Image (cartoon, rainbow, N blue to C red; front, side):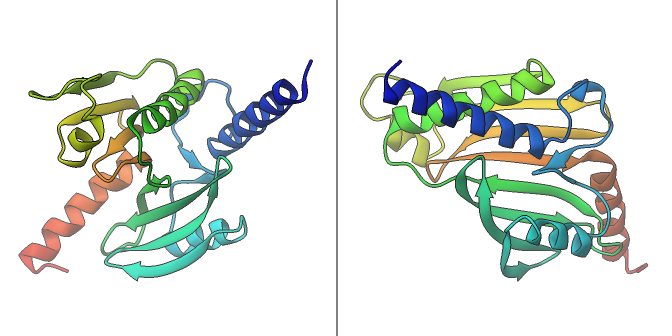
Length: 202
């Protein structure tokens, strides 16, 4: 076995291990009512969630409305992580991780498909799966990157467990692959609190 093949196996094993840790145990994940990012449960107070990520090497880049922007490594790659919370109770609602920008279509497509395959291996097939270009673009026309940048490329996959959590893997307009983890129960709390704030009740 040559050195290149050995290196490829080691890298693949390392990435698989990292993804498994990010979603806690890999057993019966589709039935688990909790969702994890990088081994940290997407729930509870946002400040506590952020502190746990700091222990894993993440740093806060800036604060935003009802959230934080963080940077760190995930699956062996540098990412920009957006962490959001409910407006009043400050419970974590969801996290969006963005991988580095790419410049070529087949590179970003491969990154997307690799990540999608890893999520599928843990949670099963997505309940929704889109992979198409809108007219006049199509794969193979040589203008795939342009289509991505103007929103004419739709590559997205979605997983969920009833009313508990959801995961999405997407090719974004900025030539980035993203993965999102959402706590569905806290998202409902977010909607209710936002509505009360609009009504002036909080």
